Image 1 (cartoon, rainbow, N blue to C red):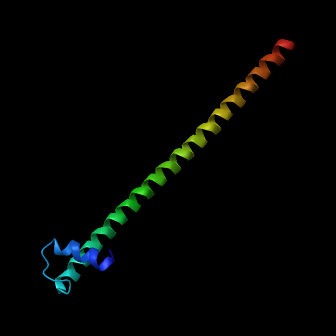
Image 2 (image 1 turned 135 degrees about the horizontal axis):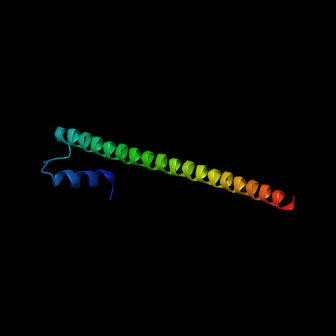
Image 3 (image 1 turned 120 degrees about the vertical axis):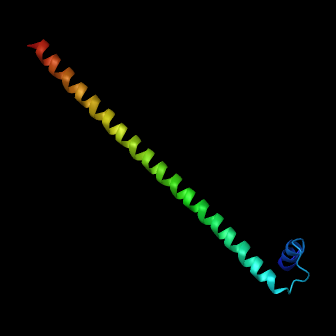
Length: 87
């Protein structure tokens, strides 16, 4: 089924008498605007998700560095204790 027939079938069910009815154009534009808004909303949602993932990744990276710093500090303390024991 070609696109014109699909469009006509959709708008015929909405009560338009003929495909050349000028009001169909307004209806199509309205439908396009709705779809554009839905797409914009989905993109905004994806951007939010991406930013959340980015923040989670940065927090995880920071947690990793914090853990490394803690481990490094612990190792230095152990080395100092071992030096004291040897003396």
